[in-house]
Length: 201
Image 1: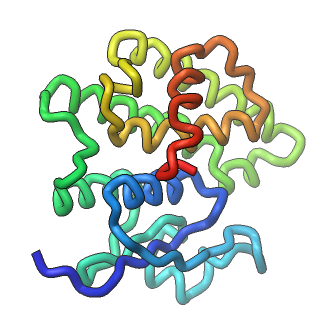
Image 2: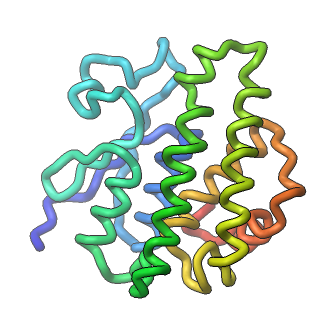
């Protein structure tokens, strides 16, 4: 396929959704440039008219690649997997692929949006930590149970997949909100396995 210039990732350093995409780009060894979008400076650069043209949802990440701009991290991850199948991040086995998607969806739909900046602002300073802890803990209970059946060295078997790209940034968020991670030994083991991997750092 023809590739038009170097991909540009609109990203914020503390955004776990942006981090997922950075990990996948790194694992697939796709060179890219970062265009920082501060979610807090001047009320949030994501709300500017200029950035709204990039992503109408006023969120990061967005990835400009192959002459197109893509939004939503899972959508971007699947696009990278479909267009750059070398160094695959999805298993060949259909059941294992389904397990990867399950973990990704629980994080991307059932955990992360509930402790997103825009939600925490609405919840208020006083209650935000308790709120984030509740939803992360609830989601991690489900993921730990799924991992008890699917995990090898990583989330699904012994190869790094998109599930790991989603899990590690969410563990970072859990620590940020002081979630007790002791009930989740498999999640912690996978996090330790990947914490020094250059693509994840």
